[in-house]
Structures are given as structure tokens and as C-alpha cells.
Length: 154
Image (cartoon, rainbow, N blue to C red):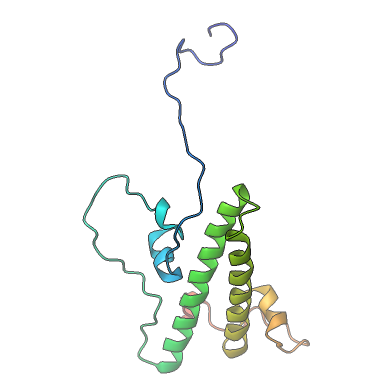
């Protein structure tokens, strides 16, 4: 140990610098889910590789129209939920952003509407959607519907 340093190396090996993120263009929510960010300016490759194709399909793929509608609705919920999570990370460091805060409230309302629609048609996906979907108050419906391993869409 050298002096009060906890490291054994006498010199600084590296210093990281990370510029503060600014608001920029947004992907549509399905693309954002596939790319891993809602912000187009943050989608920077570490290295260049073949673009390939994604196996993620949020449009529904079942032959049964009811299951296809269910999968499509679940895809919308997944995309909006991801956008809210990514936006939340941004707003953690930019709480006064004039673009981000209204978008957060808009997406949160859209997500609640989608969760309510899904719960009323199929089964609740969250505990809160048992209440918002107007399900029978005398029944605890959290376990209703098929689980993903039972054929429910994920």
C-alpha cells in the first residue's frame, strides 16, 4: 500500500468520462424494445457487425385469431412497459425535462389502459389491473388464466 491509497499502483491507470445525456429522437416503442433503448442517439454500436434480424415479434403469430389478438395486446404492453422503464432511467438524472415528464405520464396512462383491457378480456397481468379492470371484487383473480408454461402468451 502506498500512502493512503488503497490501490497498489502508484499511478492512475484510467479515467472514464461520460457526457451527460441530452434529450434526442425517440424510436417507436416496438423498435425501442428490439434495440434496447428508446433514444436513437444512445444506440451506438460497440463494434460494427452484420445487422441480422431479430426473432422478437410483438405483432402476434398464432393462427387462432383470439390468441393472435392476445399476443398482439401483450406485445403492446411489453413495448410500452419497456419505454416507461427506459424513460424512468433518463428522468432519474433529468427530473425537470420538459419533454420527458409529459411523455412519462402519457405512457403510464396508455400502459394502464392496455393492462385494463388485457385483464378484462383475458386475465390480470398485475395486481393493480385486478382493480382497474373492474373484475369481481369477491374473487382474488391473480392466479386466473394460463401461465406462460401452460400456453399463455409471454
